[in-house]
Image 1 (cartoon, rainbow, N blue to C red):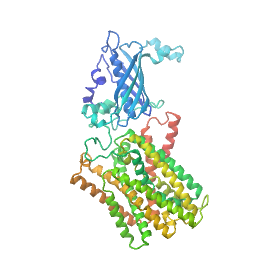
Image 2: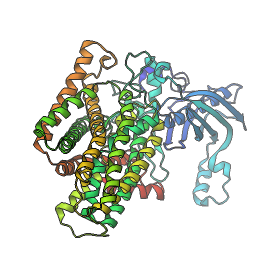
Image 3: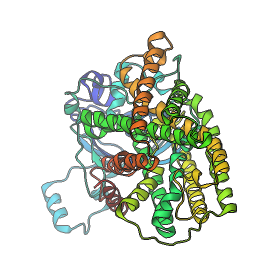
Image 4: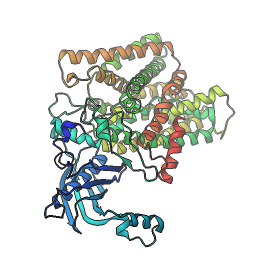
Length: 601
């Protein structure tokens, strides 16, 4: 803890001293859904109520401090306030003793956490008693000798404030609250047998830190902001992710099934979908543990420092620009099909550029989320029209369980399946949720829709269109029906690209606005900067689309360069980072360690 903050902290400040608490408490913390803590401290002779007995108020304070540390590890904001605390005294507490206190979160509901714990007193042993304990191998040693005398038990209710960044705005209080978060660059010692981590000696390391910012999300306190970003409900977030994911991906899957055969394709679509659900949940956990994360760049900073921030910022930006280019290519293919190649493809590309640029102008996701409903209906309509058409006309027959393929076509097919689960900038959507804890519901909505629609569309279209199924799949229907299908799917093709463009633009806009309140304003400089960012990215995407005009080619390139890493590799790295020091604490942890290690290496 920073020296300025420690002077006002009751345990480390007022109660510390040679005859009080000569050393700061030593903590072991196991951070999981039921956060557990073990604390050790020495209580001197000058903390008594009656002579010879430690004051009960000190025990109350120790309980409150330990419980608060537990609460801070389960709340997304890392801040919990005491609502009530009930203590039951069991035995007199003696001074000049070592005290051990344990606490654990026993229940969690929304912004409330119930915590229980106990405090025990360890009496000093003589040399003869210590020798007897070593030789006895616990035979004849009482529970009290092993674990100490039970002094008190307590239960408490902690609540996470609604407007936490407004409630805690003094510098000293922020420093105190940050004691529950390990400063950047500090590594914890750990007990690999228990999974607990020790927090001792952090104060000395923290003295080297020059900044102590309150851990909060990237958008900060928006209570009085002119422009608010954290406005999405879980279903709006889910629809946004569906609009972003079920677009280009589903259009390439029938051709992937044709290249691989029914059996391998079904296994890959279901298997990679379930893995994407798990890795998406891992990203959610990582976001809850680090609320300041709003995009891949922020995650990179947590994982690898400044180098990681710049690396993943560049990677996510390039991924999204290529994704925008993919949507422009698909838009051009759609207009060529609808118009019968009435004009130059470059003209259609420019039209897609202008329309996408205009639709990307809203500053917040909430305004774009309403378009996601139209997008979802649009893509489903186009796909279902194609399915019905090929089911009636039966232009081919595809029923091969497996097919013989070469490396190029096999790799391209697998890459397209990976891509279909890979166009998901989840952290950016999470950052604009009203409550980040609602993310799993949005994720499950997305994955249920993805796996179900991918299986249905790819298998039905392949079954009736045969081995020569087109990619995009909408071209498999007869000419007139194909034009109708592309017309129905056109809004989804546009909106999905707009969502990708908005996320990429927001990433750059947040970087150039860092350290100012510019992004919460609507003045000329703020709006001008936003438009300039959007224009630059869409022009770059258009150039890439003109350079790589093939639909399958650009999807395979995006998957190989970005989608596989962002969808599977990086979440595995995040899990390993969150669980450092406890990889083999249990059989479940050991299994998950191997699984997540396999994702990226």
